[in-house]
Each structure stands twice: as C-alpha cells, then as structure tokens.
Amino acid sequence: MKTVTLYRPVGEKELILITESNFKTFPPRLEQQPIFYPVLNEAYATQIASEWNTKDAFGNYLGFVTEFKITEEEYLKYKVENVGGKIHNELWVPAEDLETFNTNIVEDIKVIKVCIGSQFKNVSHPLVQSQIDKLKN
Image 1 (cartoon, rainbow, N blue to C red):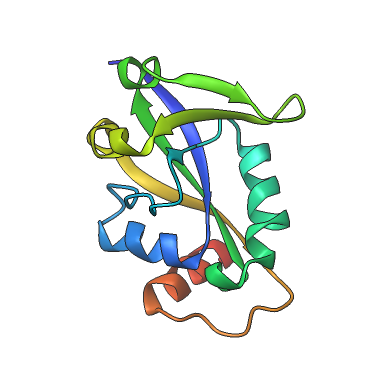
Image 2 (tube, rainbow, N blue to C red; image 1 turned 90 degrees about the horizontal axis):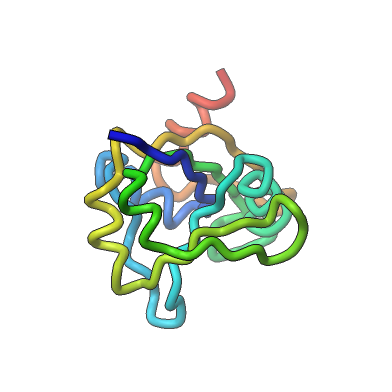
C-alpha cells in the first residue's frame, strides 16, 4: 500500500484530543471550521506552529507539529491548495469527510516538534507535558 506523509500544526487543545485517541485520529472540526487542512511539508507546518499557534491563547501559546501517513488512495480524493508561497500547500478535506479520512491514517500520528510562545505559562494537561518532555530529550 502506498502512503503519503502529511503534517498538521496543532495547539494544546487539539493535541490533547489526539493523545486521547491514542494518536489514531484528528478531532472533528468545530462548526466554524468547514475544512480540515493538513499541510504537505514540515517547513510549512513548523511556520504555522511557531508563528500562529504560539500567539493563540486558545491553544495555550503552544504549537506542535504532527506527522502522519495517509493512504495514497485517500490522499488523491482531495484537492491540494496553494495558499501563499512555494511551500504553502494544504490538502483540503471537507469537515464531513474527516471521519473517513481518519480511518485511512496508517500507523500513529507522531508529534515531531514543539514551539513555545512567549506568553505560555503552564500546560493544562499531563499528556501535553509528556509530549513536551519527550521532544526536549
């Protein structure tokens, strides 16, 4: 089976939900979020995590870069959108397709990077602290 590696920058709240799924699924989108958009490269995911997530109070000023593999068959169902520069490519998955998309994730979702904003004070969940500790070692 062929797979495609994708990346997803997330804040603390989304990371908690991912860890609670045992790193198997991404949480459903909120009502005002019609699209789930993983990105196609680590550099872009890191840019979002470091420049946006670290300034977001809702995500507790933390940005995490996740990496996961999806079946090529599932990947090819969706359109790649460029939303800026050369590296700014996203896979646009309609929110209503996310459950099916999740069933096509191969292996576990991995947390590969953490970015900590200047306003961050404390983690709100021990699962988040364990991810930060793992990445710092």
